[in-house]
Length: 139
Length: 99
Image (tube, rainbow over all chains, first blue to last red; front, side):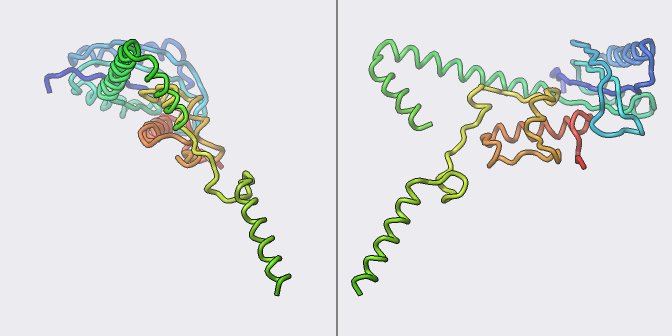
């Protein structure tokens, strides 16, 4: 449990809330995270946009995205608070560190492969050319 | 007898040509060209649920997830895509069901 996890928290605020209230809600969310020992790496106000379906009779919503680093305890606390707050229409937390690690791994592997290809290409250009031709045909 | 034989041969010849032509859309289905995964070509490692434009192109009018046989995505990317669409639905970026 000691390792750091990264989460994306996205929540929808009531469209009737004014800018000041949106700021207040966002700041209180940030405060809950930092109080619990987490850190905020990104805050993005995505603004008002239309909802794909009605949530508590509202057609629009103000989206806010937070990126948080921490142990997971602060997520539980924040979700508890958001659940009882009726100005927040919906929230969702996604753990992204694992997916990002996996994406990075795939990227690294691709880079290694490309490197190998260019190395062998210098030694025997003729062969790799025919190989790539065969690959293109197979695809 | 001989006329009968001639007829058979011509019928066979016609069938062969029909199959070779392939007739896209109406002919034998197995002639369809296999699609290659778009995400593999673009070297996509992660499909983000916030990318609404992209996800919308994989959810036709009813809001269902486009099946793999039509989207042409490989298994790994279709999984990522499905996960992203489901997350987007939860946060009202995409509809669960459209009328």
